[in-house]
Figure 1 (spheres, rainbow, N blue to C red):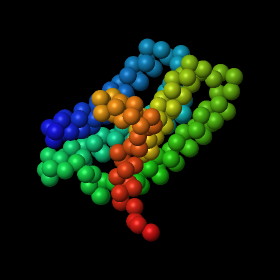
Figure 2 (cartoon, helix red, strand yellow):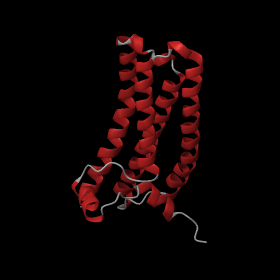
Figure 3 (cartoon, rainbow, N blue to C red):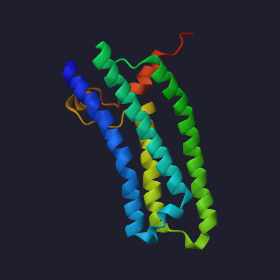
Length: 175
């Protein structure tokens, strides 16, 4: 069982890191092949990309810390300092979500009638995906890609709280 958990944690953090590494070249390639998109000219694109990358890095760090602790100490309970830092990141992430929404407005004002509609669609998709990633990590688990998660969903007919949310609740002071 420990081996399966270790493999799952490694899969999760490696997947996040792979996405972090590949999204930048894919963005460059997309902008180069389809210059009409004007992705790199949109402030909202850069903000959305930054937000998404930051969330992926936080997620990779979270899963890696659980994996490392499992290997070293035999438990996958997230170290308290990691949870505390991610709790602070949660506030920063919310601020970035709001700032990114403002960047969409600034781009709208800046481009007015020449607004790159197709680039906006891709940027909006990236922004929504970043928000979903934020929700997936800090609130409710949105990804159900293994048998036990699907079984939970079928049996309980509701979404699970995310692992990080549970860790943050565990560290809450009792009042």
